[in-house]
Amino acid sequence: MPPAAAHQPKEIDRTLKKVDESLKALAAFRQRPEVAAGCGAKGKNAEELRRLLEALQRHHAELRRWSSGPAQQEQQQQQPGERWGLSKKVDEARVRIEREMKRLQDFER
Image 1: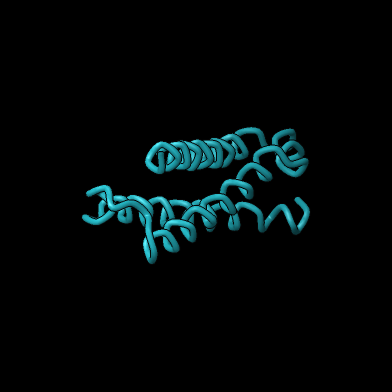
Image 2 (image 1 turned 120 degrees about the vertical axis):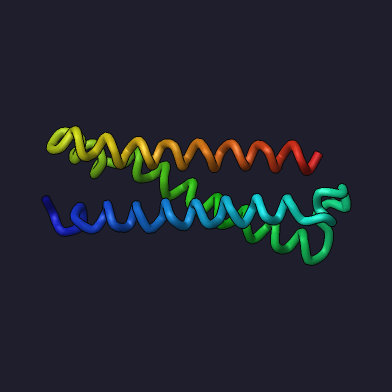
């Protein structure tokens, strides 16, 4: 396994933890009384929401790159069992991000 591929599972795990943290922060944001009451994302809330969305978009792009990159396809040929577990986690995290982004689009309308 090349050195870059050896670091990739650690990097993926680190990113998956960041995704979980970002999704929890977003859920906490939506639970705030001023946001839940319909005051919307104005002022300070709008800035925080934008920051959370940017983080999720960055994570989403990274996960998409990993799930479709040539390194993943090469690893799948070499170690299909190990790759499947990691790939499944990446795909699940990507779908969770997409679901939350859709929920936020509906919330903003």
